[in-house]
Each structure stands twice: as structure tokens, then as C-alpha cells.
Length: 147
Image (cartoon, rainbow, N blue to C red; front, top):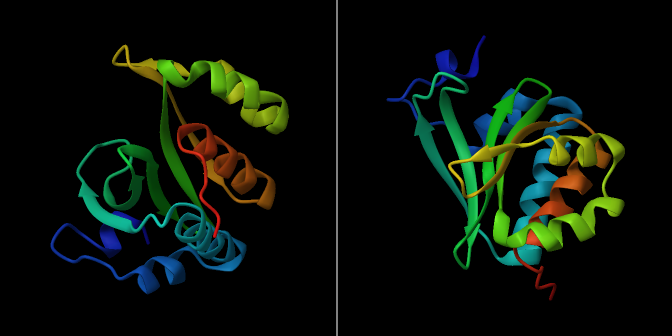
């Protein structure tokens, strides 16, 4: 069943509901990400509902010190992230490219312009490599503060 059908606007899921919907390896990656965002940034998740036709339904956002780390969309077995890297962070992002997987480097380099503010792209997290790429991109936006 589709995520937005299972949890329409009037029925907000719990974080446990999201984990169960994702399931499998994707669930483990999701939990790893939440632990990382808490440890590295003390960033708390915020659940919102979007009626956007591209990815309608409940999603999760992390934000800290004015930096948005992207919007996370639950999917069966994985999750997708919509992310914007502002043009003012382009030098840091380009310096991080060698540390990213070839797939993520290509995605970043071919990303479109988001309202003249930065590069925007959407990608799916279904492996540890993809999750590590996302964490590295988050570090471009805001340096982690490990305890």
C-alpha cells in the first residue's frame, strides 16, 4: 500500500510506524541516520505533511542552526531524500566530491538549479554507501559536533 494512502493528512504516523513501513535493511539505515543526526548535530526530527504531487504524504526533516538537511520520504525498503546545496556552499561541496561515491558525484554534478539558490537533487538511500554519502553532504552544510 502506498505511504500516502496508509497515512493520509489526517492520520499522522509515529516514528515507529515509519520504521515498520520501511522495513528490512532500509529500516536499519533509517535508524542509523536518526542516531547520527542526534549525535553529530543534536538535530531533532520534525514530521510534516506535504500534498506535493511528486512525493505526497508525511515526511521528516532535520534542521539545525538554520541549515536544512533535506526532506526524508519513507518508502518500502528504503527512503528518499530531497536536498538543496546552496551555491554559497559550492566550494565545500566540490571539495567533498572525491569522498563521495561515483553515483553521488554524478548526481551532484548534474543537479538542477533550485530557485537560483542552489543545486537540488533527490536520491534514494538503500545501502550503507548511499547513507555515508548523505552524511558527508550534511557535513558540507554544517560541520558535525561529535561529543
